[in-house]
Length: 368
Ligand SMILES: *Cc1c(COP(=O)(O)O)cnc(C)c1O
Image (cartoon, rainbow, N blue to C red; front, side, top):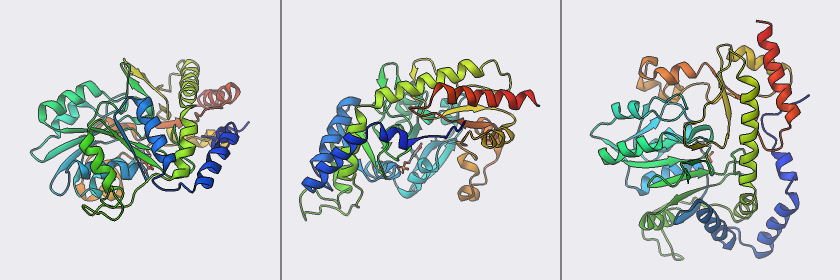
Protein backbone atom coordinates (compact mmCIF):
# COMPACT_ATOMS: atom_id res chain seq x y z
CA UNK A 1 0.00 0.00 0.00
CA UNK A 2 1.10 3.55 -0.76
CA UNK A 3 0.35 6.48 1.54
CA UNK A 4 1.34 9.83 0.07
CA UNK A 5 1.83 12.79 2.40
CA UNK A 6 -0.94 14.67 0.57
CA UNK A 7 -2.96 13.94 -2.58
CA UNK A 8 -3.93 17.12 -4.39
CA UNK A 9 -4.82 15.34 -7.63
CA UNK A 10 -7.42 13.27 -5.77
CA UNK A 11 -8.88 16.42 -4.21
CA UNK A 12 -9.05 18.32 -7.48
CA UNK A 13 -10.47 15.43 -9.49
CA UNK A 14 -13.35 15.30 -7.02
CA UNK A 15 -14.41 18.82 -8.09
CA UNK A 16 -12.80 18.88 -11.54
CA UNK A 17 -15.84 19.96 -13.48
CA UNK A 18 -16.58 22.91 -11.23
CA UNK A 19 -12.95 24.02 -11.38
CA UNK A 20 -12.89 23.81 -15.18
CA UNK A 21 -16.10 25.80 -15.37
CA UNK A 22 -14.70 28.50 -13.06
CA UNK A 23 -11.51 28.79 -15.13
CA UNK A 24 -13.49 28.98 -18.35
CA UNK A 25 -15.66 31.80 -16.99
CA UNK A 26 -12.57 33.86 -16.15
CA UNK A 27 -11.00 33.18 -19.55
CA UNK A 28 -14.23 34.11 -21.36
CA UNK A 29 -14.48 37.38 -19.42
CA UNK A 30 -10.70 38.09 -19.54
CA UNK A 31 -10.86 39.00 -15.86
CA UNK A 32 -7.34 37.99 -14.96
CA UNK A 33 -6.26 40.80 -12.60
CA UNK A 34 -8.32 42.90 -10.14
CA UNK A 35 -11.48 41.49 -11.66
CA UNK A 36 -14.95 40.48 -10.56
CA UNK A 37 -13.66 36.97 -9.85
CA UNK A 38 -11.25 38.46 -7.30
CA UNK A 39 -13.72 40.78 -5.55
CA UNK A 40 -16.29 38.00 -5.50
CA UNK A 41 -13.89 35.63 -3.72
CA UNK A 42 -12.70 38.38 -1.36
CA UNK A 43 -16.29 39.04 -0.33
CA UNK A 44 -17.12 35.37 0.11
CA UNK A 45 -13.99 34.77 2.20
CA UNK A 46 -14.56 37.84 4.42
CA UNK A 47 -18.19 36.92 4.90
CA UNK A 48 -17.47 33.31 5.86
CA UNK A 49 -14.81 34.47 8.31
CA UNK A 50 -16.93 37.31 9.66
CA UNK A 51 -14.48 40.15 9.02
CA UNK A 52 -14.97 43.48 7.33
CA UNK A 53 -12.31 43.38 4.64
CA UNK A 54 -10.36 40.84 2.62
CA UNK A 55 -7.63 41.84 0.16
CA UNK A 56 -6.24 39.20 -2.18
CA UNK A 57 -2.44 39.29 -2.55
CA UNK A 58 0.24 37.33 -4.38
CA UNK A 59 1.12 34.86 -1.60
CA UNK A 60 1.18 34.41 2.19
CA UNK A 61 4.68 35.83 2.62
CA UNK A 62 3.60 39.07 0.90
CA UNK A 63 0.46 39.11 3.06
CA UNK A 64 2.65 39.19 6.18
CA UNK A 65 5.29 41.66 5.01
CA UNK A 66 2.75 44.04 3.45
CA UNK A 67 0.58 44.00 6.60
CA UNK A 68 3.61 44.87 8.72
CA UNK A 69 4.66 47.67 6.35
CA UNK A 70 1.17 49.18 6.18
CA UNK A 71 0.95 49.03 9.98
CA UNK A 72 3.97 51.32 9.97
CA UNK A 73 6.50 48.71 11.11
CA UNK A 74 10.00 48.95 9.66
CA UNK A 75 13.64 49.79 10.36
CA UNK A 76 14.54 49.86 14.05
CA UNK A 77 11.42 47.97 15.11
CA UNK A 78 11.31 44.49 16.61
CA UNK A 79 8.59 41.95 15.92
CA UNK A 80 8.27 38.86 18.10
CA UNK A 81 7.63 35.57 16.28
CA UNK A 82 7.46 31.96 17.48
CA UNK A 83 10.65 29.88 17.35
CA UNK A 84 8.80 27.02 15.65
CA UNK A 85 7.19 28.12 12.39
CA UNK A 86 7.82 28.21 8.66
CA UNK A 87 10.59 30.62 7.62
CA UNK A 88 8.04 32.97 5.99
CA UNK A 89 6.86 34.20 9.41
CA UNK A 90 10.25 35.65 10.39
CA UNK A 91 11.35 36.40 6.83
CA UNK A 92 8.36 38.74 6.39
CA UNK A 93 9.57 40.80 9.34
CA UNK A 94 12.97 41.26 7.69
CA UNK A 95 11.34 42.03 4.32
CA UNK A 96 9.43 44.84 6.06
CA UNK A 97 12.80 46.18 7.27
CA UNK A 98 12.26 45.25 10.94
CA UNK A 99 14.02 42.67 13.12
CA UNK A 100 12.48 39.30 13.99
CA UNK A 101 12.87 38.30 17.65
CA UNK A 102 12.16 34.65 18.47
CA UNK A 103 10.19 33.38 21.46
CA UNK A 104 9.73 29.76 22.53
CA UNK A 105 6.60 27.70 21.86
CA UNK A 106 4.29 25.79 24.22
CA UNK A 107 3.32 22.11 24.21
CA UNK A 108 0.49 22.84 21.72
CA UNK A 109 3.14 24.19 19.32
CA UNK A 110 1.96 27.81 19.55
CA UNK A 111 3.78 30.89 20.82
CA UNK A 112 4.27 30.61 24.61
CA UNK A 113 2.82 33.68 26.40
CA UNK A 114 5.44 33.58 29.18
CA UNK A 115 8.30 33.31 26.72
CA UNK A 116 6.77 36.15 24.72
CA UNK A 117 6.76 38.45 27.79
CA UNK A 118 10.50 38.01 28.31
CA UNK A 119 11.23 39.16 24.75
CA UNK A 120 9.45 42.53 24.89
CA UNK A 121 11.81 45.54 24.71
CA UNK A 122 11.33 49.26 24.08
CA UNK A 123 11.73 48.51 20.36
CA UNK A 124 9.02 45.84 20.16
CA UNK A 125 6.14 46.99 17.97
CA UNK A 126 4.24 43.84 17.11
CA UNK A 127 3.79 40.12 17.68
CA UNK A 128 3.01 37.59 14.97
CA UNK A 129 0.90 34.75 16.33
CA UNK A 130 1.03 31.60 14.22
CA UNK A 131 -1.79 29.09 14.52
CA UNK A 132 0.62 26.32 13.69
CA UNK A 133 -0.49 23.01 12.19
CA UNK A 134 -4.10 24.29 12.19
CA UNK A 135 -4.58 24.90 15.91
CA UNK A 136 -5.20 28.27 17.58
CA UNK A 137 -2.32 29.58 19.65
CA UNK A 138 -2.99 30.79 23.22
CA UNK A 139 -4.72 33.77 21.70
CA UNK A 140 -6.41 35.09 24.87
CA UNK A 141 -3.21 35.31 26.91
CA UNK A 142 -1.26 36.69 23.96
CA UNK A 143 -3.84 39.40 23.17
CA UNK A 144 -3.89 40.43 26.84
CA UNK A 145 -0.10 40.77 26.82
CA UNK A 146 -0.20 42.75 23.56
CA UNK A 147 -2.91 45.06 24.94
CA UNK A 148 -0.97 45.71 28.14
CA UNK A 149 2.26 46.41 26.30
CA UNK A 150 0.64 48.42 23.48
CA UNK A 151 1.78 45.96 20.80
CA UNK A 152 0.05 45.18 17.53
CA UNK A 153 -1.01 41.55 17.22
CA UNK A 154 -0.90 40.09 13.72
CA UNK A 155 -2.13 36.56 12.99
CA UNK A 156 -0.36 34.19 10.61
CA UNK A 157 -3.25 31.99 9.47
CA UNK A 158 -1.38 30.26 6.65
CA UNK A 159 -2.09 26.89 8.31
CA UNK A 160 -5.41 27.70 9.97
CA UNK A 161 -8.14 28.40 7.43
CA UNK A 162 -11.32 28.30 9.55
CA UNK A 163 -9.82 26.81 12.66
CA UNK A 164 -11.41 28.35 15.71
CA UNK A 165 -11.01 29.34 19.33
CA UNK A 166 -14.09 29.49 21.55
CA UNK A 167 -16.43 29.77 18.56
CA UNK A 168 -14.53 32.56 16.79
CA UNK A 169 -12.43 31.77 13.77
CA UNK A 170 -8.70 32.35 13.99
CA UNK A 171 -8.05 35.40 11.85
CA UNK A 172 -10.64 37.45 13.78
CA UNK A 173 -8.45 38.23 16.80
CA UNK A 174 -5.59 40.37 15.49
CA UNK A 175 -5.31 43.82 13.93
CA UNK A 176 -5.01 41.85 10.69
CA UNK A 177 -4.59 38.21 9.70
CA UNK A 178 -2.60 36.75 6.82
CA UNK A 179 -3.50 33.72 4.75
CA UNK A 180 -1.60 31.66 2.22
CA UNK A 181 -3.34 29.81 -0.57
CA UNK A 182 -0.26 27.78 -1.50
CA UNK A 183 -1.61 24.55 -3.06
CA UNK A 184 -0.83 22.32 -0.06
CA UNK A 185 -2.61 24.48 2.52
CA UNK A 186 -6.08 23.48 3.75
CA UNK A 187 -7.54 26.03 1.32
CA UNK A 188 -5.14 26.10 -1.61
CA UNK A 189 -5.10 27.62 -5.09
CA UNK A 190 -3.61 25.90 -8.14
CA UNK A 191 -0.54 28.09 -7.76
CA UNK A 192 0.52 30.84 -5.38
CA UNK A 193 -1.96 33.13 -3.69
CA UNK A 194 -2.78 34.76 -0.38
CA UNK A 195 -4.92 37.36 1.34
CA UNK A 196 -5.06 39.76 4.26
CA UNK A 197 -8.18 40.22 6.36
CA UNK A 198 -8.90 43.04 8.80
CA UNK A 199 -11.72 45.02 10.37
CA UNK A 200 -9.64 48.20 10.13
CA UNK A 201 -11.05 50.11 7.16
CA UNK A 202 -8.11 52.52 6.79
CA UNK A 203 -5.60 49.70 6.96
CA UNK A 204 -7.55 47.75 4.34
CA UNK A 205 -7.52 50.76 1.96
CA UNK A 206 -3.79 51.27 2.43
CA UNK A 207 -3.07 47.59 1.81
CA UNK A 208 -5.25 47.56 -1.28
CA UNK A 209 -3.41 50.56 -2.69
CA UNK A 210 0.06 49.25 -1.79
CA UNK A 211 -0.61 45.98 -3.59
CA UNK A 212 -1.62 47.89 -6.71
CA UNK A 213 1.31 50.33 -7.06
CA UNK A 214 -0.04 52.77 -4.49
CA UNK A 215 -3.21 53.53 -6.41
CA UNK A 216 -6.95 53.00 -6.27
CA UNK A 217 -7.63 54.73 -9.55
CA UNK A 218 -5.87 54.10 -12.83
CA UNK A 219 -2.56 56.00 -13.01
CA UNK A 220 -3.22 57.97 -9.80
CA UNK A 221 -0.26 56.78 -7.76
CA UNK A 222 -0.56 58.32 -4.30
CA UNK A 223 2.54 56.53 -3.02
CA UNK A 224 4.98 53.91 -4.28
CA UNK A 225 3.66 50.46 -3.53
CA UNK A 226 4.32 47.18 -5.22
CA UNK A 227 2.56 44.58 -7.31
CA UNK A 228 1.08 41.74 -5.27
CA UNK A 229 -2.35 40.59 -6.36
CA UNK A 230 -4.40 37.44 -6.29
CA UNK A 231 -4.97 36.17 -9.86
CA UNK A 232 -8.53 36.09 -11.20
CA UNK A 233 -8.24 32.43 -12.16
CA UNK A 234 -6.94 31.49 -8.72
CA UNK A 235 -9.68 33.53 -7.05
CA UNK A 236 -12.37 31.74 -9.08
CA UNK A 237 -10.88 28.34 -8.16
CA UNK A 238 -10.64 29.36 -4.50
CA UNK A 239 -14.28 30.41 -4.46
CA UNK A 240 -15.25 26.93 -5.68
CA UNK A 241 -13.03 25.29 -3.06
CA UNK A 242 -14.36 27.57 -0.30
CA UNK A 243 -17.69 25.69 -0.52
CA UNK A 244 -15.92 22.47 0.46
CA UNK A 245 -13.50 23.68 3.10
CA UNK A 246 -15.70 22.81 6.10
CA UNK A 247 -16.16 19.29 4.82
CA UNK A 248 -12.42 18.90 4.12
CA UNK A 249 -11.48 20.30 7.53
CA UNK A 250 -13.94 17.89 9.15
CA UNK A 251 -12.36 14.97 7.31
CA UNK A 252 -8.94 16.03 8.59
CA UNK A 253 -10.24 16.21 12.15
CA UNK A 254 -11.78 12.73 11.85
CA UNK A 255 -8.52 11.32 10.49
CA UNK A 256 -6.64 12.97 13.35
CA UNK A 257 -9.02 11.47 15.90
CA UNK A 258 -8.55 8.05 14.32
CA UNK A 259 -4.75 8.44 14.43
CA UNK A 260 -4.83 9.42 18.10
CA UNK A 261 -7.15 6.53 18.94
CA UNK A 262 -4.73 4.05 17.34
CA UNK A 263 -1.48 5.66 18.47
CA UNK A 264 -2.23 6.68 22.05
CA UNK A 265 -1.47 3.16 23.31
CA UNK A 266 2.04 3.43 21.85
CA UNK A 267 4.23 4.71 24.66
CA UNK A 268 6.90 5.90 22.23
CA UNK A 269 4.59 8.38 20.54
CA UNK A 270 3.25 11.67 21.87
CA UNK A 271 0.07 12.52 19.95
CA UNK A 272 -0.97 16.14 19.33
CA UNK A 273 -3.18 17.53 22.08
CA UNK A 274 -6.12 19.80 21.49
CA UNK A 275 -5.97 23.08 23.36
CA UNK A 276 -9.13 23.54 25.45
CA UNK A 277 -11.50 25.75 23.44
CA UNK A 278 -9.67 25.22 20.15
CA UNK A 279 -11.27 23.89 16.96
CA UNK A 280 -8.27 22.18 15.33
CA UNK A 281 -8.30 21.75 11.53
CA UNK A 282 -5.19 19.55 11.35
CA UNK A 283 -3.32 21.10 8.50
CA UNK A 284 -0.66 18.75 9.84
CA UNK A 285 -0.86 15.81 12.23
CA UNK A 286 2.43 16.08 14.10
CA UNK A 287 3.62 13.54 16.68
CA UNK A 288 6.75 13.52 18.80
CA UNK A 289 9.03 10.53 19.10
CA UNK A 290 12.59 9.93 20.29
CA UNK A 291 13.39 7.72 17.27
CA UNK A 292 12.11 10.29 14.78
CA UNK A 293 14.68 9.88 12.01
CA UNK A 294 14.69 6.07 12.14
CA UNK A 295 10.89 5.98 12.09
CA UNK A 296 10.79 8.40 9.15
CA UNK A 297 13.14 6.12 7.18
CA UNK A 298 11.20 3.01 8.13
CA UNK A 299 7.91 4.52 7.01
CA UNK A 300 9.49 5.76 3.79
CA UNK A 301 10.72 2.21 3.07
CA UNK A 302 7.15 1.02 3.58
CA UNK A 303 5.74 3.61 1.15
CA UNK A 304 4.40 5.95 3.80
CA UNK A 305 5.49 9.53 3.14
CA UNK A 306 6.01 11.73 6.18
CA UNK A 307 7.26 15.28 6.65
CA UNK A 308 9.31 17.34 9.11
CA UNK A 309 7.74 20.59 10.34
CA UNK A 310 10.18 21.81 11.08
CA UNK A 311 13.51 20.07 10.95
CA UNK A 312 15.19 23.06 12.59
CA UNK A 313 13.55 25.69 14.74
CA UNK A 314 13.86 29.14 13.16
CA UNK A 315 16.61 30.52 15.46
CA UNK A 316 18.92 27.69 14.40
CA UNK A 317 18.56 28.08 10.64
CA UNK A 318 21.75 29.06 8.79
CA UNK A 319 20.17 32.41 7.83
CA UNK A 320 19.98 33.42 11.52
CA UNK A 321 23.45 32.17 12.47
CA UNK A 322 24.65 35.72 13.13
CA UNK A 323 22.13 35.98 15.99
CA UNK A 324 24.13 33.31 17.86
CA UNK A 325 21.16 31.73 19.57
CA UNK A 326 21.67 28.88 22.01
CA UNK A 327 19.24 25.99 22.60
CA UNK A 328 18.85 27.08 26.25
CA UNK A 329 17.01 30.22 25.06
CA UNK A 330 14.29 28.07 23.48
CA UNK A 331 14.14 24.90 25.59
CA UNK A 332 10.85 23.65 24.12
CA UNK A 333 11.46 24.42 20.43
CA UNK A 334 15.03 23.12 20.56
CA UNK A 335 13.93 19.85 22.15
CA UNK A 336 10.96 19.41 19.79
CA UNK A 337 12.91 20.02 16.58
CA UNK A 338 14.52 16.58 16.96
CA UNK A 339 11.25 14.81 17.81
CA UNK A 340 8.59 16.19 15.45
CA UNK A 341 7.21 13.97 12.71
CA UNK A 342 4.25 14.89 10.46
CA UNK A 343 2.15 11.88 9.41
CA UNK A 344 0.12 11.81 6.18
CA UNK A 345 -3.24 13.56 6.50
CA UNK A 346 -5.46 14.88 3.71
CA UNK A 347 -9.10 14.81 2.62
CA UNK A 348 -9.71 11.54 0.82
CA UNK A 349 -7.14 9.56 2.79
CA UNK A 350 -8.77 6.20 3.48
CA UNK A 351 -9.23 4.39 6.79
CA UNK A 352 -7.13 1.57 5.29
CA UNK A 353 -4.25 3.93 4.53
CA UNK A 354 -4.40 5.31 8.05
CA UNK A 355 -4.50 1.82 9.59
CA UNK A 356 -1.58 0.75 7.40
CA UNK A 357 0.41 3.79 8.59
CA UNK A 358 -0.24 3.10 12.28
CA UNK A 359 0.49 -0.62 11.75
CA UNK A 360 3.86 0.26 10.20
CA UNK A 361 4.59 2.49 13.20
CA UNK A 362 3.63 -0.36 15.55
CA UNK A 363 5.91 -2.78 13.68
CA UNK A 364 8.81 -0.35 13.88
CA UNK A 365 8.61 -0.15 17.67
CA UNK A 366 8.02 -3.87 18.14
CA UNK A 367 11.49 -4.41 16.63
CA UNK A 368 13.27 -1.93 18.90
C1 LIG B 1 2.89 28.62 4.02
C2 LIG B 1 3.17 29.54 5.14
C3 LIG B 1 3.46 30.90 4.94
C4 LIG B 1 3.76 31.51 3.60
O1 LIG B 1 2.86 31.38 2.62
P1 LIG B 1 3.30 31.42 1.06
O2 LIG B 1 2.00 31.57 0.38
O3 LIG B 1 3.99 30.14 0.77
O4 LIG B 1 4.17 32.61 0.88
C5 LIG B 1 3.57 31.71 6.05
N1 LIG B 1 3.46 31.22 7.30
C6 LIG B 1 3.22 29.91 7.54
C7 LIG B 1 3.08 29.45 8.95
C8 LIG B 1 3.08 29.02 6.47
O5 LIG B 1 2.85 27.73 6.71
